[in-house]
Amino acid sequence: MSRDGGTVLAALVDALERLPGIGARTARRLAEHLLRVPESEALGLADALRAARARLRPCSRCAAPAETDPCARCADPARRDDVLLVVETLRDRDAVEATGRYDGRYFVLAGRLSPLEGRDVGDLGLDALRTRVADGLVREVVVATNPDLEGDGAARAIARSLVDLGVAVTRLARGVPTGGQIEHQNAAAITDALRGRRPLDDADA
Image (cartoon, rainbow, N blue to C red):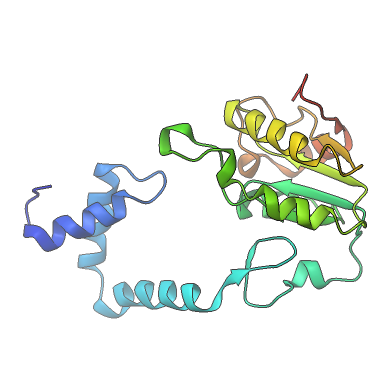
């Protein structure tokens, strides 16, 4: 791709454009910003990324990136072991946690379904979820995928993957609006959705 500023700038813009939600114009603005700020600030971003890649590993219990294994939430003895809430992203987990109304465990999927980006059911990490649920402690799996086409597809796949394990599979009530993103909901909406969760099966997922 040819852009003013030569191949080095073009390579930086291309790298930023590959980040989720970053289009060509935003990538260009970010690249120009990184070139304008003091060198220490720009390289500090690189250092933070390098440290995160070196020190963060998926928790063996919830699959969330963490510096310890198990992570702090999975190691907390005050949390309930019989309820497992499945979310698509760390942002979704943090949004639920911010309500202060959920005291069970979490499992973070390996990503969202995205046919346009080539991510299908096999990329969700459902084998790891099955292993987590098969420990015999979990009695209810609460599916907290987003109420959109991709989230509905992921919910159906989760329900199918756990059908033989003898656990109840529920889904957040539609207190989270259809098409809405969990990370953008306020605490009241997420709390209502938690309270109104219902059994999940292939017919109504």
